[in-house]
Length: 237
Image (tube, rainbow, N blue to C red; front, side):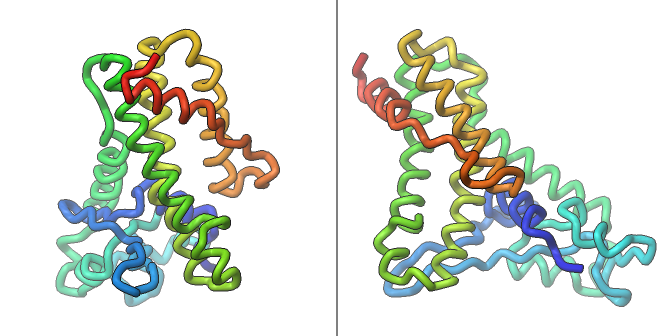
């Protein structure tokens, strides 16, 4: 049994592509820099060990349960090694690792929480930052990027694009959705159609990323939404 594509995507997207070990949160996909190709360093660690001699191994688990998202935690190489050292088995128990994972995923969900309703321009600025980050990921690594078109059969480049979808685009879409659901009334009535279009796009995109629907079912990103958010963020009507 191997980890399913769906479990991999859930793990990377829910952790926002960062190490789930308490206090670490290091980014696990590295962008191209100084002539170095982009790469990933994230490791999917088993909470209950996958082999009989591994830490926290549970012989009652089925192979499917062992490789399921619920039994995995995303870590950097250093912390994966640390939790699997035999002398640390009593420190990093199943309960402790589940708590780490939950705490980290809650942190991801709460990164853009705002206690009070922001003004229209402030809300648009918060959303624009996330939209621009998504656009940069798509422009740099997406299927129509210069990098992808120059090396269409390069598995490493495709892997980085998959990683960016899971660690940047999906988490950012969730943050935008959360901001809109809590503060949608701050925006004008003329903005509402574009907002609804974005929310439908975001839901369908994540369902595709999680292998729940085919790409044909993904609703196109609405350019009008980005245009409206950008105008408001820049002080326009």
